[in-house]
Image (cartoon, rainbow, N blue to C red; front, side):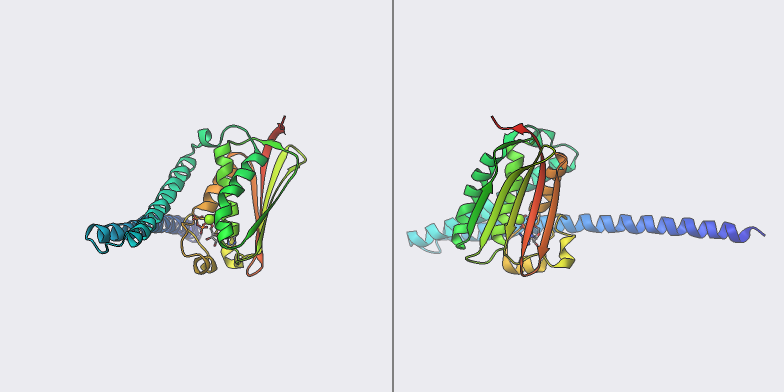
Length: 259
Ligand SMILES: Nc1ncnc2c1ncn2[C@@H]1O[C@H](COP(=O)(O)OP(=O)(O)OP(=O)(O)O)[C@@H](O)[C@H]1O
Ligand SMILES: [Mg+2]
């Protein structure tokens, strides 16, 4: 008589196990995809670099100006690879539950922002983009200078990278109640399509409009920013509209006023 409830219980258990297997498979597939993308990400610039060097070694040209231009290209590809590897090292530390040494400490947030805007300025100038910086009174943020640099550079770089020629990027920093530092970066660029917003913190994930607008990119910047911000008990909020622009807000604990 009680065969039916037992069957139901069994069915439920089988369904649970099937679901667990499905989740595991999806996770495995995701990891395999990541490895493939990672290999591709490193392979593509290496192949291009080798092609250039091979051409020079084989005497493709005697013109020193052409050789110089080719070597410049090879150098840029090498830099690209180094950036990717550096990002992966940081991400690896943060993912393995570590990274305390990397994020720990304090720094004067306004000074870090000014330095980061200077770093991004040449790529902004290339696109005739103005970066307007508005900062409040100085504040000491409870995060290492190196980690905060990663946050600011990645976000300001994205704002510039995904903006149109001649537009303006606003980068702001202010103190908020409850001992917090609030950083905002706003652009008038391509925006993030609604269906892509949830994926921007996933590693190696780039929206289709971003791939069209800027060919190169690893899709590691935002995941790194998120990991760093979470590690210091901060918060990140992204608001975006495709074709209109993007606003990113980062809230970071502060330790008190700068002297
Ligand atoms: N300001 C922005 N405007 C439009 N899209 C953005 C912006 N910031 C991030 N995105 C979207 O989020 C994705 C992930 O950003 P992320 O910085 O991780 O990667 P990336 O810029 O493509 O490459 P990289 O790792 O070199 O920074 C981008 O590819 C893009 O689709
Ligand atoms: Mg980026």
